[in-house]
Image (cartoon, rainbow, N blue to C red; front, side):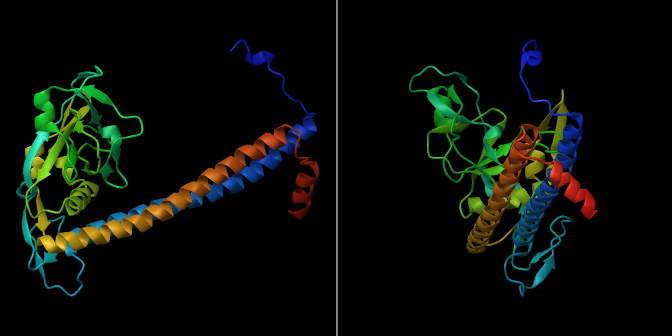
Length: 297
């Protein structure tokens, strides 16, 4: 802080300071409005994605399929030939993760997938660019290693705005385990992993998981058994695959649109910063611009 008063800055006359401030107030407000529009568009795209996922995993893809009452409030009517049963019917095993010890640069060092590595938009987890390496025993490596097709369930953490209980699909390639705040769900045969990440996501987006949250010392913990007792719709395996493929495709299109809007926001923010810098350093003479704007009004 002692260095701040010694910094050399330009100090235009008060009249020009006022003109620069007025110009920047007006121009940055325009840019901020454009940024807000893009952010709202992203929100709408994400809302549409949630709606498409929820409809597909509860109603299927055939609009003409005969329907029946599921008897479950969050499911509503489901196709007549679908089963309705508890989540646990889809799961072969659920194994808690392990934190292990500090890395030791030996054969027991493995990547540890944490909740922070969850891509909550794409509903997947993979090795990050800077992975967390932990030293894990041979037994834990054997019993808790991850493989493609496993679902990872957040069992501890969360908060009011993002409650615990998110589930994602593991798509990593390197030897990995998950952390002690995560549980590995391995699915039964004839269960499509991609479909089931969407089924869990639909339940999560409707906050079905919150009924199974136990709060202790400021950390949310998910009662896994209670959560697995929640009911969900079971399409035949072939339909699970069709729905998963459809949602993968639709999600890809949405991701592309969201990426475009995010890039536009970045460009607008860069433009805003550059405009401010140019105006306060005298690279733009705003006096005439402010006068012209005033005469137009």
